[in-house]
Structure formats: C-alpha cells, structure tokens
Image (cartoon, rainbow, N blue to C red; front, side):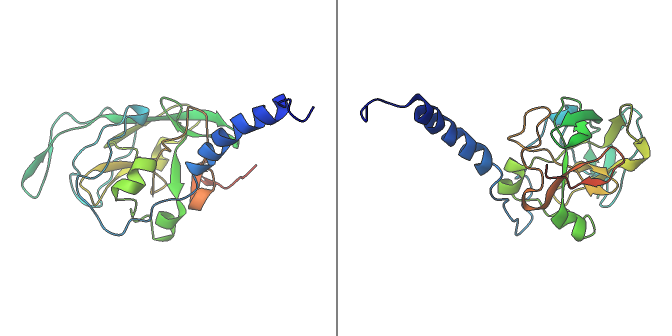
Length: 200
C-alpha cells in the first residue's frame, strides 16, 4: 500500500510547478535605474506601434485616425504611427480597460506617485511590462475618449495614457487575465478611468 502511487499527490506535484511559474511571473518588478535608449521591446498589443516622440510632454487625445504627415523634433523627421485601440473587457476583478486584442492594461503606482513620470525604462522592466505604444488612441463603447491620450517617453517613443497615467500590459497575461493585479503597485483600470485596486 505504501508503494502504490497516489494519483492525488501526482496531480498536485504536476500542478505545483505551473502555479509557482504563474506566481513567478509577477513575483518581482525590475526597478529601472537609468534611461537606456533603444532598449525597449516593441509592443503589438492593441494594434500599437513604437514611434519617435514629436516633443517631450506633448500629448494626443481623441479617436481620430493617426496623422499621415511626419512630425519633427530637434530637426529630425519622425514617422507617423498607428492607433492604440481600447475596449471594455471582463477580468476576474470586474470589467476593465483592455486593448483591442483583449489584454488588460495596467498603470504603475511608482509612476503615478511621481506625477506620472515614466520610470519603467530599462529592458528588464519593459520585457515584463511592455508599454502600450501609440501616438493616437481610439476607444470603444463604455469608455470616455477624453480620458485617453499619449505622452512622450524619455526613450524617444510615444505611449498611451489614461488620465495621465502611462499604460502597460503584462507579458504573462492572456486576453481577459489580470495575473499581476496589485503586484508591486501595478493596477488595472476601471471603466471610469480610475485605478482598480480590487484583489478579489
């Protein structure tokens, strides 16, 4: 009897690595120390595209199509970019703001507390938390277009914002997931643009 394998224990042993793997994806957020130009991983979530920023601190809001004429900054030509589309999605923490492909978007309390200053800059941070890149945003029903915009990143790209908060998505999330809700101050967004701090 002692030598007979227990199917229950085998099932638990099989599931435990998966559970720890999922937790490990959100166990630690890299803390960026300095800006590293060109070190970011381009995001394709929500049909977004990486671009050069037209000017530091500039923003674009609304649901119009992206500009077709290039912008300039410091005498350099900057190509026009695509649109970041946002919609209402269902998550384990209620309805939330997500990208066109169903990925929930997060903001980071560390940036919010710093007056929405972008500090997720190093490759380690952006590999885990890709920025939602775009110079123009488009929103679906249930969302307020005027709350969305874009901001120029220190690394020379434009990023979508919600009420001024830079938006990111989580690499480990599948559409509808919010695996890292509350982890190290990363929170998803309510439909009214506020931060969703639910943990259950």
